[in-house]
Length: 153
Image (cartoon, one colour):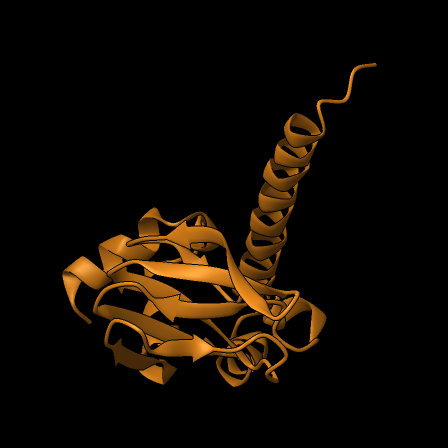
């Protein structure tokens, strides 16, 4: 496996505490996607069976509102998206579009299931890390909502 790719994965919170062997195991089962500016990784409401790790480029996560797609956040190199699909098994909660040329690693539910069968401890670490990342994003969203509301206690 490419050293730069391994280093990128090891620097990400979702893969914190995950062994190099586990990352290699996942990468052997991963797909590498190259999307051009304006192409979608997925659309809100699509069925969800994988997460993505952005190796390069910038993407925008967008939500539908009153017939328009509004940008919820932008993500760059080293960020992951779509990870909620690996925990809740619901359809995609947002659309993600490439703002620039993007290269991303796609990690499927099937790959994680294979890891579950191979090494339950490493699988559990990744699941806990995904939960922590989702919790971190929820806290940030809560803070933004609180600031926008101008609420005074």
